[in-house]
Length: 591
Figure 1 (cartoon, rainbow, N blue to C red):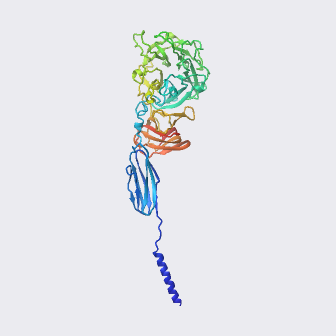
Figure 2 (figure 1 turned 45 degrees about the horizontal axis):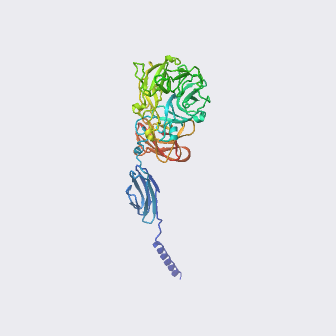
Figure 3 (figure 1 turned 90 degrees about the vertical axis):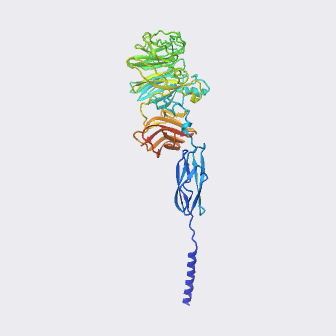
C-alpha cells in the first residue's frame, strides 16, 4: 500500500512540474526615449536622441522635408539617432512630433521645433548710419541730440547736449523742431571716441522748475578746496536767459545753486535781445569767463550782440562789467577756450550775404559757419582779432541738410576735437522736422600760434583711441551703433541706464573689443525679466557665439558657457536681444 501511494505521488509531482515548465512567462515591455522636447536654432543644427527598448521600433517623421533622421528603424537595445535641421527660411517657427513605436505596442513622442530665421543683417540694414558700417557719427544713433559741449574727467570725455528728442516725442515725425518742449539735457561719455555711454537726462524741469526751457549747455570743471571736482553747467533758459547747475560728479545729481538766472535782462549791462547760448571757460589762473548773446543785428556786418563777463570765484556770480566782443556777421552759439594763454572765442555766423568785408588776407566766412577770434585781454573789445572760419555748415559738406551751427572745441588725450551737430538721423526716423544729432571730429590746432585750420563734418568721424576691454564690466548703454530707436531707462545710481527689450529683436553693438590675448569661456550679463540675448562677433551672420536666456523677476547676473570656437583678435560685438519686459544692464566675458 505504501509503495502504491508513493508511485501516485511521484506521478502527480511529475505532471505538475511539467505543466509549470511549459507555461509562458510574461516579459515587461520596455521603450524609453531620452528627450521629449528639442528646440533648434533658426540657422539649423544637430541634436541626438537615445532610444532604449527590448523590441524592434520605428520612427514616424512627418517633417522629413526639413528634419533629417540618421535612421528611422532599429532593434532592441540602445540606439543613438541624430536629428539635423537646415536653415528655416519659411518666415515662421515650425514644429513637428516624432512618434517612436515598438513592436510590443509601446510608443513615445518627441516634440521638435525650429525658430524662424531672420536675416539680421538685412533686418538691421537701414536702421542707423553706424550699425552696419564703420561710421562713428553721430555719437548716439537712437535719439536726437544737439548744441554740444564737453568736459574731460578721469580719462573720459563727457558730452552734454540739447535733447531734441524730447521735442520730437512731443510733435511726432510730422512736426517741426521749434525747441518749445525741451526741458532736459542729454549726457554721454567715451574714453575712445567710438563707443559712447548714454548717461541719461538732466531733468531741468525738476532740478530748476522755475526755468522754462533748457538748450545749448556749456560746461567746465575745477578742483575745489573741499578736494572734490565741481562741475558748472550753464544752459539757455529759452532765448532770454542763462541758468546754471552744479554737481560733484559729471553725471550728477545736479542742483540749482541760485534759484534764478545768472544772466538775464535784470543784470546790468545785458543789452542784447537774446542773452542766451552760454560759452564758459576757466583760464590758466583758475578764473571763470562766460560769453553769451544773440538778437536783432545792429548792422549785418557788425551785429553787436556778442558779450563776455568774468565770473566770480564761486563760478555762480559775476565779477566784472559785461563787455562786447566785436564779432563780424555774428549770429549765436558762443564758445570759449584758452589756448597757450590766449582766449579763443568761437561763434556761429549769420545767414546774411557778405556784402562788407574789410580783410584782404582772410576769406569771407561762409553762411552759418563757425568763425573764431582771439584776445589776450578779453574784457577789452579792441583787443579781439578776427582770425578765420574753421567749420563750415554741415549742409555745405553734404552731411544732412543745411542747419544752424553750434560747436565746442576741446583737447582730449593730447588731441583736439570739435563737437557739433548735423541732421544725421532724420531719414532713419522718417522726419524732416529739423531734428539734429551730435557728431565729433578730430582736428589739428597750432597751439603755439593759436591757429585753427578748417575741419569738416563727416559720417566717418574719428578713429578709435584704444580698444574696448570685454573682460571687465561694460554697460549695455555703451554703444558704437544700435538697431535704432532703442529705449533706455534710468536704474540705480545717477548716470546708469539699462536697455529695454521689445517683442521684436533689437541690437546693440560695441566696436573694437580686444580678444587678441585671451579667448573667452563664458559670457555673463546682469538682466531682469523674461528675454534672451544672442551674442555675435564680427558680424550678424551665422549662429551666435553664445546665447543667454532670462526668466526672472528680479535683477540677477546670469552666466553661459561658450561652446563655439572663436579666433583671437579685435572684433565688434553685437548683442541681439528681445523680450517685452526684459531689461539689460551690463555684461562681460570671462576667460
